Length: 419
Image 1 (cartoon, rainbow, N blue to C red):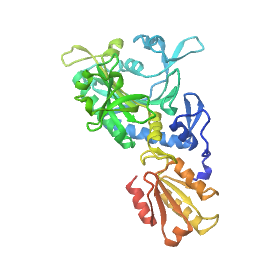
Image 2 (cartoon, helix red, strand yellow; image 1 turned 135 degrees about the vertical axis):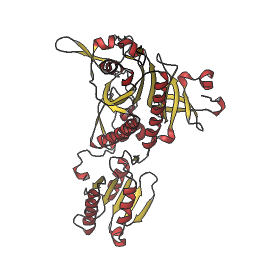
Image 3 (tube, one colour; image 1 turned 135 degrees about the horizontal axis):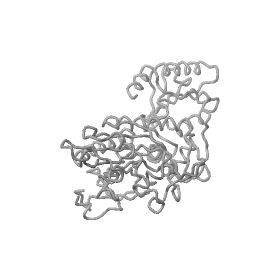
Image 4 (cartoon, rainbow, N blue to C red; image 1 turned 90 degrees about the vertical axis):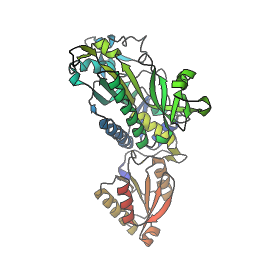
């Protein structure tokens, strides 16, 4: 991609009404655009990052047997009345509207009800179970106050996974697989060392649920962390009974602020009871399906990465989700041998299917370097008269700031190794 053709431009100043670090950096670097409070558009760079985050999530969920589908956002009132969750007194963040025929509909904030209702058509025998289905779908939540940039919005993409099992043991087997998959996801996204499996309230569904909390001062939650055991307890459920069930000791725990980047719930038979989702077992006896729900917000993850993996200069993307692998910069004048060599390297990178953003703009070197730091691509490659004289290129890691001179052959080996 030629940077001169990228319609978004970096900004020196943060948007006036933004206070969250993630939204400030992502806006300045040209990844997102704020449309209104709690609603952000993804720009080309933001789309590339979002797609890569979703790819990582999908790969790990597919690995444990998840099957992808895509449900509608529009919701029937009658479906949700079966669980009493249409009532605004029960769920206070619905977006509701009416069709032209005066039929009342809602915009889904989650999808347990419609998916359970749908599965009645496909589940009848024990042979149909277990299975799990997931989607990347836009959710709508009429929050009283949107805050924390793209980490808490009114419109957002959610990866929601639902499991359907014959009994509690079968459910727990999948639940543990999902927990392991989530840990792999956060590790691949560069958040593994700061993310803790956290005991939290199971609400009306179970005694406990598990959240995945990433340590950051921008977090809205307070958790108590055992850094050796890599587990934590949400302040909302912090008591001696929970600690005894964490096999945790008070003296080993550290209070931290954190943001929830994922959660998993055991739903039991609550929804299958409401929709009469049953199956016949081996003896021909009718049994209720046992369910689980597992959520991750890709945009919230993008915001969390921006909060946690950044510095005073800008964003620092992990290689797995960076919009490009290389930021190629020429310091030569237009028409110079240096510029021609940069163009040649750009073509070679493209031929090798290595994602590269080539800063071909006619601006000062300082501006190019500042924009490169702000955008946060993992590897900066600079070609100048000096590097040309040595027959090498200068590479700089955005993560640790390390710089060195290498030849092009070594550059290709490095990039292939870190794909």
